Image (cartoon, rainbow, N blue to C red):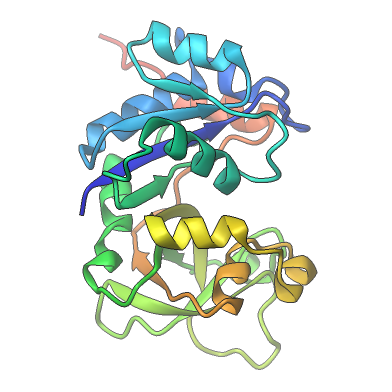
Length: 245
């Protein structure tokens, strides 16, 4: 595999305006995410920007950015445009979609997301954490993945949903929205219209499953903290505060 990591970023966030440029200990959030991706050492890292201000912040830190059309409906569409602009020859056969709001991401998670692609039949890989808290099982804001890991660390995704069936007694997993696409799978995905299940559940990955694409999960040990609100930003600043002395 020859992966490239692409981080989609835009300023238009309802709950936290200008989120990619939010300052965390002297650096914009998007720069922290870019650094975590570099530390993972899985391939070159590209930031797909909706606005020039984000590109300027990334480039000032020494990163590479591509300016994309602002009107894309999803991060997947944005990263596909960026990859076509940056790699028109198709040298990179795997595209990792890393969310731009994970400034404290463990780089090992990014490496783990690629592991399911060792199986040639897998089109898309992503990650999940086993749910232990009953409140999390019942929270419709937590996207659940169903899979049978057995004793392994990878498994084929059976379904993605926001609410578990009342009779579901087995394990459930918190889906972590980092994806590794085979290039051909991403090209097909962005060309498809939203599927009925995708529209009903508001879960983009169901478009691929309904198209017959295979999604496998990598089991990771903890859910990375995403920054969606001012309270999340305060929390991540505390977590990432430099140690005294």
